[in-house]
Image: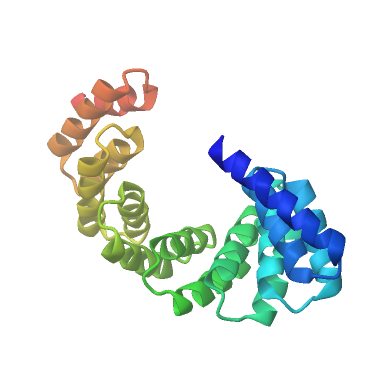
Length: 240
């Protein structure tokens, strides 16, 4: 409520300023920011457009127009804005990161990877950019590069279960079973109720010809997911 009241006061002040001079790009931009803050993205975009009509060379306006379009799920249009922002300011981490996310959403992982590479060159200690890069590499089955990205992500946040899990899956795909198992073990400690982790642990133990360890993993799996038919079947196969 306080945010809404503050925003309304800001809009009143900005409207007074624009009534005196409607050729002020920064005022239109600021009005857009205020509207976006309270979820009025369509109106915010109109303000950003007015600002861009007056000055097309401000990267922040393009970036924030992209954010507003993203909020409206207009990904292609948002992407155009983010790319314009990076042409004006090639060191804008957030714009490069959002370009990567947009390309991910559009099913273009190669372009996403290039954007994430730009992002981590600017901010090398950003977990999300490294993690997303790993996911994009997975999409194009470049498992070695994905492992490198997840390793970097985990050096920044070693408590992320999904990163450990994804790295384990890639190591499994590359037939590095012992290293994969280490990753699945770490993931299961961090997120012990995720059935996918226990399935992978069991499969890896089977690949290492350790049926008793695999059975232990399936036993844990049926405890946390008793409706998992695959777990019961694989467990029965091991007991035969």
